[in-house]
Image 1 (cartoon, one colour):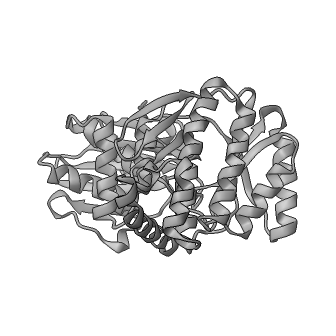
Image 2 (image 1 turned 135 degrees about the horizontal axis):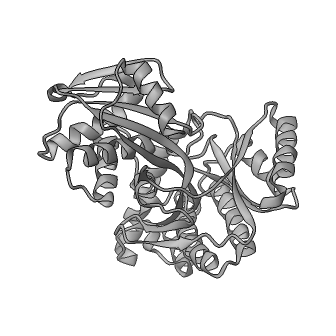
Length: 385
């Protein structure tokens, strides 16, 4: 997105040229490994990407905020003293929630016009909502001198999504969007928020996103069900292991876990969380060493665990992962995100991406009946441009 292009769109949509505008970008994210363990106090390895949300903000001399997007037709106008959730405002509730919670923190904001332009494919599960939230937080923070740190803005965005929009998400998405850096992945402890940057030593390989084009209609109810099952498993295991989170249990204790939980769903959920947390730890070491082949095998093991133990895959995700692994340029693939549709990722030799995309598309379409969308991603980061 070009700054001049967004300025022209701003003039066309709002009917005036922006005065002393700020131009910002907040990335989307993928999760390399560490799925469905953020709400179990575990480790995750997300990466901010070069797809995301651009925004241009300009002050107004009244107490009105106007939100618009080149991706949607309407302008949402609200008085700053009268911000509340409105289902009819759709996507605009995400940035509205940020402003609401900044004012609830005691900050005084002036009026503004803000225009968003996102290039994250719709429904792909690459955290478009967190991207919109973070770019709004950055814009208001910079324009009105509010003094939030990047971590504080990530926590504010999560609070807004939980409390204002009513989406029970963990911290991973907002944290990855706000704290990710170009050339790096993040290793984040979702319980303590301790993190460090991991250099992306991918040895001539690129991460490729494979969008199944299957919407994740079942994910919300299934997500809540999985959270409940993990909470029940933890309640049974906590007195024995003296842990705060399911992910705190070490893999060498799986025999005892099986003895306490018995065969069945609770054991399956616990086994995924415990083994996935261990895979993230191992994956960080492999990334630092540049052992990308072994990292690829961890992705395969992660998908297997998500499909069989956590039961959040689907025919489309399994088909696209299977197609990816059948191509010689691919050294690992797995579903990413909540599951039941959305995206998978693959580690692919960068000089073979076009051939890989054609091969996977044909194989997937033959089995599923429609084409996927396949594209490489690079690392990105949030910035005022």
